[in-house]
Length: 385
Image (cartoon, rainbow, N blue to C red; front, top):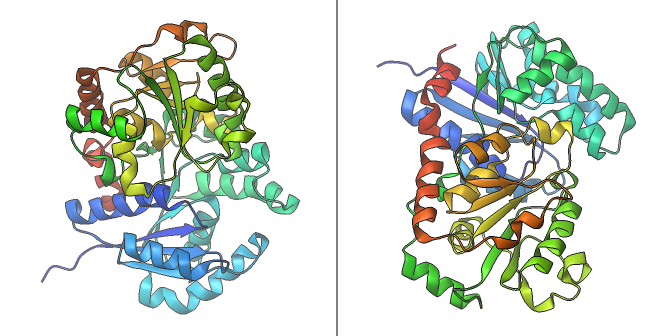
């Protein structure tokens, strides 16, 4: 019997369940089915909420080992003690590492001979994000993470990332010269990969939510983390609602509407909801425009927000800021969105509802461009290099 190649996908931290499923477990499942390696996910997570997070991650991908990390990020090296005991039973010689800390654990294991191939998987510019948005309340680690990221980029055997802009950032920030990175943007979670809902169903859903056929629905879905520039979203909605009385706003987010600037004078035109992840695609599909506005930062410059692909797959055109990874250019090139610059929102006053034919076109566009199948060649390299 042929022995399957073993690959370990190592993560460190409590990433959002939706992001973790689309970026990690869906991709691991795809590679396992398509290329037949034995891929085990090993996740270090905080002891705070350990059992709740553990249950969710095991449900996403059965071949997962969930390990409690040592308290406090500055003691990240201590997690090698756990790996020293368990690696012979759960690890492999080939590691894909998500995050600079996971990659540096991999580098130390490579020094000890436990690992012979290390691939750094960079979903973002971690040190820039920590610096720009004060992610970690620890000045030592905020300084240290830059060194850890530089080591991950330049000392790993191979690299995978989400945008060509990340390569440019590595060159200027870390002196990166290899130019052999694998670029795979954040692909769609499986719950978003389906044909557009029937037109009649979307009409009924709009009625169920209290909307009419004449309403133009702008939707914001996601968190209100600092890099999401939620204040800019609020500011833009305030201007939009003043432009056209048919415009309505839906927040699929944990927000208090009364605290928003756009709420004043528009109380009847705002709604909010918080849904199970599996129910989000249907509700997005009844809307007309998705909002992806970010203030300029390195974090957003190199990003590939999964939300862009999710909006387009649900038939929405995206109102997007300039300079968001490779997606701002994609929105214009493929007629699936509009660039919105602060201070220049008046051109949006004549936006009409998105037709069902356009929704179907956008849905097909997303499936052609943002599923794992579109990156089969790139993902296959992760199992063969």
